[in-house]
Image (cartoon, rainbow, N blue to C red):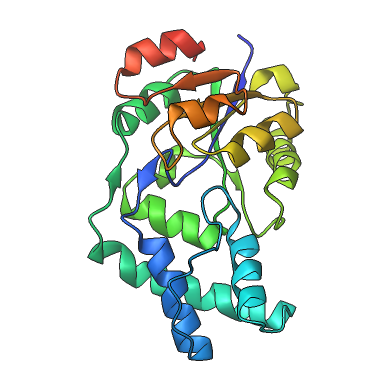
Length: 227
């Protein structure tokens, strides 16, 4: 049976962290630079953590140096770990049932394609109990541009499974237009799920290959998507 590479986004697709990541970013800005900012005007949904930090530093006219970015992300991971238990976050509808159903099917390779740094991704998914479902991932550590992450995931899939997954055997699943664009950048099938901050109508404007409300009807979604 032909294997299929399923690349999942995290925030808004698998989990709702209750705003833990955004609060951690605000806390870093206060702790590291003594600046209080609600981060209005900073695009967060679908962007990589690195790109978000770049936006914040530019807004505050702080030097966009490798040292400042690295220090910001280090402190962000620390604050995120503290913030997650304080928030009323949750797995999104159907995710808890979907992942084990997909994992037991030998044709599926489950991995991450996310704007999170790897440390942040692990903190979030371990907290919500689903980190171990994913074999590997592509993260903000790899590149600040979301559209450049696909090839990293493809290479890791090839290294782990000795399979050169063709574009038609790859699904990119996410909740923002950036996820759709990221999937299209590698020619993958794009599956948009309307569980994040973008409505079904907004996602449809970006022409994903598939568009679902959520994964609550697990068996129906698996059949519909051929998983």
